[in-house]
Length: 328
Image 1 (cartoon, helix red, strand yellow):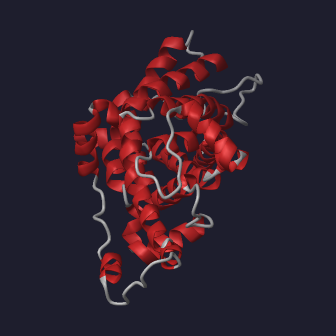
Image 2 (cartoon, rainbow, N blue to C red; image 1 turned 180 degrees about the vertical axis):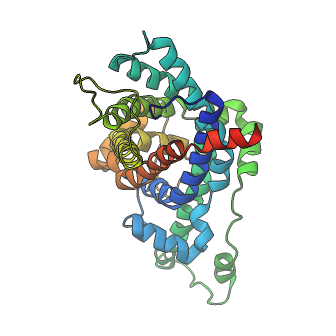
């Protein structure tokens, strides 16, 4: 990601380390983003902080990390594919060691396309685990309406109290995977792949060129030309990574909302199910208005910016090169 020459194995190590550290740091905010994006009818959460506070209160601190194991397991191969693909495409599109802007955009497009092989099933499983707490939080809110319904008065010590004390079992990544493979085959794990492509390709097309240009600001030779050999200072690479990541994240938030809705299997009371990207877009616009497409935009920026800032920090420190040096 920086200007210094980094071998492909070192890039893969850097990407894996950056992914593991980044996911651990920002996963609770990502969980809040998923739950906010999935709210349609009953508004369980008023915003990111309210979502995190209610999650900790009802599920404990580690409830904020539901689905993190899936991400931590698959983030390394995801980053490896993305970085390797971007590296290959940049080399193929470069002429005399120079890569024009259109080449940077195409390389990012290729990287975003390749990574969906891992990203789609990873996001599919993560979303089910993240959203389980929101669905569980909706059930007690339906109790007052049920109590007001005509019929015999509920017992104060009867089955209703027992029902509330025995919540449904929490889903697991293994259980969801086996159920999807059994009922829908491999295609079940790739539900929403089109929407994932719609999000990840534009993101990479925005992020990679924007980062490269921000990271090159102020580095000019005496001739007035950009000095591509000069290495940006740590703070510049970190800020460039955060800035480019947050801009790209907010820009594709509407596509992320559509992807999240399509990949969510369990719906709450009165919530829509969708037949595809067009149906999802139309229903959201008709029932919730244009603002619904920006749900979770702040959370997404707060997730992506540190992720890419951390990635630039890992590259700057040369973690991959250090590991390979110790192994060599």
